[in-house]
Amino acid sequence: MSADYFLDITADVCPLTFVRTKLRVERMAPGETLEVRLNDGEPLENVPRSLIELGHSIVGPEPENPSASGKTYRLWVTKS
Image (cartoon, rainbow, N blue to C red; front, side):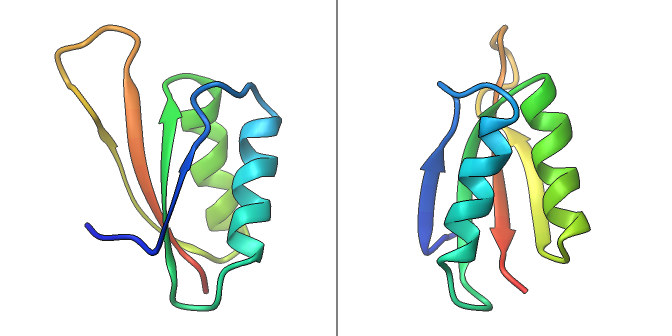
């Protein structure tokens, strides 16, 4: 899937993972898409759920490498 913007939040911890994602989405125009790279665990649980609660469309998450331990995922957010 193609995206207008990319954000890597793998170095961040909750709640900063959602805060950074939300701030980036707020600067986007409706209909634009953001690709987010995030880690398994709290970010994978909280970021998509919170974005859906704000009314944005989500595709994913999809694992970057399904066979790796310490999985990293990709998530696409389209601003509503």
